[in-house]
Length: 286
Ligand SMILES: [Ca+2]
Image (cartoon, rainbow, N blue to C red):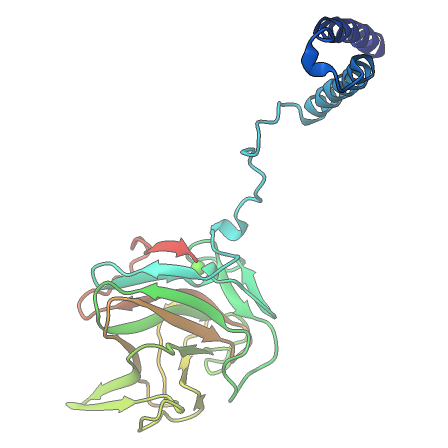
């Protein structure tokens, strides 16, 4: 039935177009060409195009509307920056973001198999250990600072494998273009400050550190924790100074496999908010 219909349609279209061409052939402007030949060729093409259009519409189910038809894949893992560097916008002295917004490479894996991870899940390194060797498979983030100052850094992480509180419990962190990056410990009225090795500043933390990177650890088994310390056996909180209102870089690189990273925050003194319902910072995709 469809074929018969198409033949009829073809014949009627041919008729109409031949009529139009024969009328216009008396026009002086068409002197350079053979109007009959052109008329036939155009007619066949027109009919074929018409058929193609018909078939496309049948196979698609709905008509195609120009170039604006949605063709993009839905966002992976529920966030939108997988192809680039997520930029978190600081507001009122606070940044809160999901670690899994970063573009993952090498043996970084996105997972959502442990209850309680914020956002769409968490990321975890499943490759080799990078004990004294930071800077591999770097996860990169941008932080747009509107309120300059010294921010405390904490991530929400978890030991995702094993029962030891000193295994699978740390990763590397660096703010390479910040104005200062240091660990701070207050105890009994005294204050200790440490700077990463490679920063040109001393003293340095106990244990491994290199090229401006701090090893950031926690020591709790079996739960997601907002805990970030540096300097082995001498827990120093982690701080970073942003002296200007501009965009800075934050980098994470793997150290211990199976250290799950969920979320992070940067906050000025008095602005800390790590409640589960704390609103996430605005994210822009670079
Ligand atoms: Ca998360």
